Image (cartoon, one colour):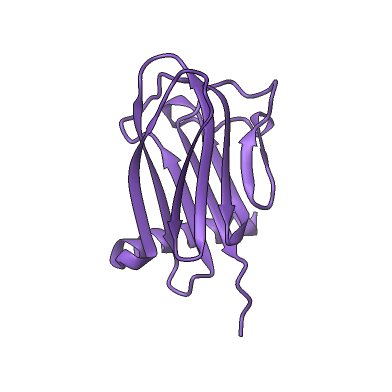
Length: 154
Protein backbone atom coordinates (compact mmCIF):
# COMPACT_ATOMS: atom_id res chain seq x y z
CA UNK A 1 0.00 0.00 0.00
CA UNK A 2 2.80 2.47 0.91
CA UNK A 3 4.67 1.67 -2.32
CA UNK A 4 1.53 2.58 -4.29
CA UNK A 5 1.37 5.99 -2.58
CA UNK A 6 5.07 6.64 -3.31
CA UNK A 7 4.62 5.72 -6.98
CA UNK A 8 1.64 8.09 -7.29
CA UNK A 9 3.69 10.91 -5.75
CA UNK A 10 6.56 10.19 -8.16
CA UNK A 11 4.10 10.22 -11.07
CA UNK A 12 2.76 13.58 -9.95
CA UNK A 13 6.28 14.99 -9.69
CA UNK A 14 7.17 13.69 -13.13
CA UNK A 15 4.18 15.45 -14.67
CA UNK A 16 4.87 18.77 -12.90
CA UNK A 17 8.61 18.74 -13.53
CA UNK A 18 8.18 17.55 -17.12
CA UNK A 19 5.78 20.40 -17.84
CA UNK A 20 8.40 22.96 -16.71
CA UNK A 21 11.50 21.70 -18.48
CA UNK A 22 11.64 20.67 -22.12
CA UNK A 23 14.75 18.53 -21.62
CA UNK A 24 12.89 16.31 -19.17
CA UNK A 25 9.94 15.46 -21.41
CA UNK A 26 9.38 14.25 -24.95
CA UNK A 27 6.03 13.57 -26.63
CA UNK A 28 5.38 12.44 -30.17
CA UNK A 29 2.41 11.22 -32.15
CA UNK A 30 2.60 8.02 -34.19
CA UNK A 31 0.23 5.82 -36.20
CA UNK A 32 -0.96 2.50 -34.85
CA UNK A 33 -1.68 0.43 -37.95
CA UNK A 34 -3.94 -2.59 -38.42
CA UNK A 35 -3.18 -5.55 -40.67
CA UNK A 36 -1.86 -8.10 -38.18
CA UNK A 37 1.75 -7.13 -38.91
CA UNK A 38 4.13 -6.43 -36.03
CA UNK A 39 5.21 -2.78 -35.75
CA UNK A 40 7.57 -1.03 -33.33
CA UNK A 41 7.76 2.61 -32.24
CA UNK A 42 10.56 3.96 -29.99
CA UNK A 43 11.21 7.26 -28.17
CA UNK A 44 14.45 8.17 -26.43
CA UNK A 45 15.13 10.89 -23.89
CA UNK A 46 18.70 11.11 -22.64
CA UNK A 47 19.75 7.65 -21.48
CA UNK A 48 16.14 6.40 -21.25
CA UNK A 49 14.04 4.87 -23.99
CA UNK A 50 10.63 3.33 -24.39
CA UNK A 51 9.77 0.89 -27.17
CA UNK A 52 6.22 -0.17 -28.08
CA UNK A 53 5.77 -3.27 -30.23
CA UNK A 54 2.31 -4.43 -31.30
CA UNK A 55 0.18 -6.20 -33.87
CA UNK A 56 -3.44 -5.11 -34.39
CA UNK A 57 -6.41 -5.88 -36.66
CA UNK A 58 -9.50 -4.01 -37.86
CA UNK A 59 -10.34 -0.45 -38.78
CA UNK A 60 -7.81 2.05 -40.13
CA UNK A 61 -4.70 3.76 -38.77
CA UNK A 62 -5.18 5.51 -35.43
CA UNK A 63 -3.21 8.43 -34.01
CA UNK A 64 -1.54 7.48 -30.72
CA UNK A 65 1.05 9.28 -28.57
CA UNK A 66 4.14 8.24 -26.67
CA UNK A 67 5.47 10.41 -23.87
CA UNK A 68 8.66 10.02 -21.84
CA UNK A 69 9.19 12.22 -18.78
CA UNK A 70 11.90 12.19 -16.15
CA UNK A 71 12.21 13.88 -12.81
CA UNK A 72 14.83 16.56 -12.20
CA UNK A 73 17.50 14.30 -10.69
CA UNK A 74 16.85 11.68 -13.38
CA UNK A 75 16.17 8.96 -10.83
CA UNK A 76 12.70 8.13 -12.20
CA UNK A 77 11.13 8.27 -15.61
CA UNK A 78 7.72 7.44 -17.01
CA UNK A 79 6.58 6.16 -20.36
CA UNK A 80 2.97 6.68 -21.44
CA UNK A 81 1.49 5.19 -24.60
CA UNK A 82 -2.13 6.05 -25.36
CA UNK A 83 -4.77 7.09 -27.85
CA UNK A 84 -5.56 10.73 -26.97
CA UNK A 85 -8.77 10.77 -29.04
CA UNK A 86 -10.29 8.10 -26.80
CA UNK A 87 -11.54 4.65 -27.63
CA UNK A 88 -9.45 2.53 -29.98
CA UNK A 89 -11.37 0.51 -32.52
CA UNK A 90 -8.46 -1.80 -33.21
CA UNK A 91 -8.14 -5.32 -31.83
CA UNK A 92 -4.64 -5.84 -30.47
CA UNK A 93 -3.31 -9.29 -31.21
CA UNK A 94 -0.32 -8.58 -28.97
CA UNK A 95 1.61 -5.75 -27.36
CA UNK A 96 4.85 -5.16 -25.50
CA UNK A 97 6.26 -1.96 -24.00
CA UNK A 98 9.94 -2.05 -23.01
CA UNK A 99 12.13 0.45 -21.17
CA UNK A 100 15.89 0.82 -21.23
CA UNK A 101 17.88 2.75 -18.66
CA UNK A 102 15.87 1.59 -15.65
CA UNK A 103 13.68 -1.01 -13.98
CA UNK A 104 9.88 -0.82 -13.91
CA UNK A 105 8.47 -0.07 -10.47
CA UNK A 106 4.86 0.64 -11.46
CA UNK A 107 2.70 -0.27 -14.44
CA UNK A 108 -0.95 0.15 -15.37
CA UNK A 109 -2.65 -0.99 -18.58
CA UNK A 110 -6.08 0.21 -19.64
CA UNK A 111 -8.72 -1.05 -22.03
CA UNK A 112 -11.50 0.97 -23.61
CA UNK A 113 -13.20 3.74 -21.64
CA UNK A 114 -10.09 3.98 -19.44
CA UNK A 115 -10.91 0.78 -17.54
CA UNK A 116 -7.87 -1.00 -16.06
CA UNK A 117 -7.00 -4.30 -17.68
CA UNK A 118 -7.21 -7.25 -15.34
CA UNK A 119 -3.78 -8.16 -13.93
CA UNK A 120 -4.31 -11.60 -15.46
CA UNK A 121 -4.28 -10.04 -18.96
CA UNK A 122 -0.66 -8.85 -18.93
CA UNK A 123 2.76 -9.62 -17.48
CA UNK A 124 5.29 -7.18 -16.02
CA UNK A 125 9.03 -7.83 -15.74
CA UNK A 126 11.86 -5.52 -14.67
CA UNK A 127 11.98 -3.92 -18.12
CA UNK A 128 8.78 -4.80 -20.01
CA UNK A 129 5.02 -5.14 -19.90
CA UNK A 130 3.33 -7.42 -22.43
CA UNK A 131 0.06 -9.15 -23.17
CA UNK A 132 -0.48 -12.56 -21.65
CA UNK A 133 -1.37 -14.87 -24.56
CA UNK A 134 -4.72 -16.58 -24.05
CA UNK A 135 -5.81 -14.10 -21.35
CA UNK A 136 -5.53 -10.69 -23.06
CA UNK A 137 -8.93 -9.33 -24.17
CA UNK A 138 -7.45 -7.62 -27.31
CA UNK A 139 -8.58 -4.21 -26.04
CA UNK A 140 -5.92 -1.56 -25.36
CA UNK A 141 -6.26 2.19 -24.81
CA UNK A 142 -3.31 3.21 -22.62
CA UNK A 143 -0.11 1.93 -20.99
CA UNK A 144 1.69 3.75 -18.18
CA UNK A 145 5.09 2.64 -16.87
CA UNK A 146 7.25 4.24 -14.19
CA UNK A 147 10.86 3.10 -13.91
CA UNK A 148 13.71 3.81 -11.55
CA UNK A 149 16.98 4.70 -13.21
CA UNK A 150 19.80 2.16 -13.37
CA UNK A 151 22.17 5.02 -12.56
CA UNK A 152 24.16 4.57 -9.38
CA UNK A 153 24.33 7.36 -6.81
CA UNK A 154 27.74 8.99 -6.38
